[in-house]
Image (cartoon, rainbow, N blue to C red; front, side, top):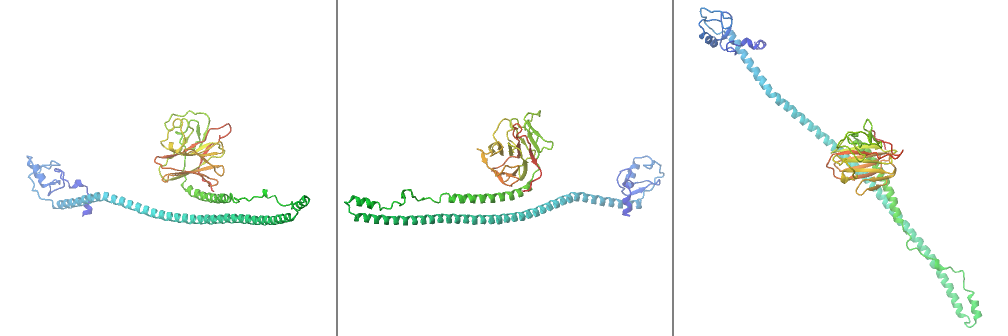
Length: 440
């Protein structure tokens, strides 16, 4: 019954007079139904009794009895509707709660996943730290062994030099003692001669051994070991530098996992700089181009900034510098002055390394620091660790560390490049930001 009622439209249960669900419904002889109270009120305002819908006169006035079937059907419909409304209302109330519950559950799941990732990261961190400790123990143990070996070698060399000196002095002393004995014997013989016979004296003087050594030229060096320790330390430094280079290569391989896709921002490029279509290359065209005025553009110094900026994390990129005799590479604060001349230095918001005259490498500190890389890099790697406040430079081919700036960063940082001016046919090649890391 309830399922049948639910298929009927609500209009079938509405009184046309009060437009509400029937209450004690009655049916006129013409077949129309109304609320009993509503029909009596309607007739009370009329001179004749007629149907409110079809206007058919009902004479004599019909006796109004409640239509029990319609009343039962109406009551069931009312109950069904109230239940549906209650259910809908309940569902309307539960829907936001359900969505909130689902959202909370999702947030919980996300945090559980984050916890798992953090715990996994901590495991990897511990493993990395343990590996670093083991490697450092191995390397420092080897260095200690090398240090002790070098020290023993220095001590052995010094002791051998001392023994040589002792043996030489012993030989010289014996030789001197022999000559002293000979001279004393001659002296004794002279005393036995007749001192008043000059001829005998001359003859006696001829017996003095004339082949004796000229001892005025014989000397003993009292500092025989000058440079021994220094040379040993220099050899240790060479060994140490070799170990540093090995560590640097390993370090560079690990840094390459932080590779960033760097492109150049044409809105910052000096008017003499030409950028490639892919924004990966920049060269100095030695004449100003027609470019729109922009407060972000460098107007006196031929620099260009990377489009990307960083205010957190670790980032790594490489720049090809082969066939270049001048360049500047590094990072710059987003808020640096870009108009007029300025000095490249951390004080002014620039952490850069430069090449000048094809062979002079400079870290642009205050004052500048001269650098001596073991070879001329064809590709330079730049690594930024924002939280640690470090900007490091490496030779990609050898993996050798060139220089590291250490500072405190508070502003957003951009990569910065300057290809330098061309000098005739020299320094005309572009600086190229490379996307693929070289194997070391």
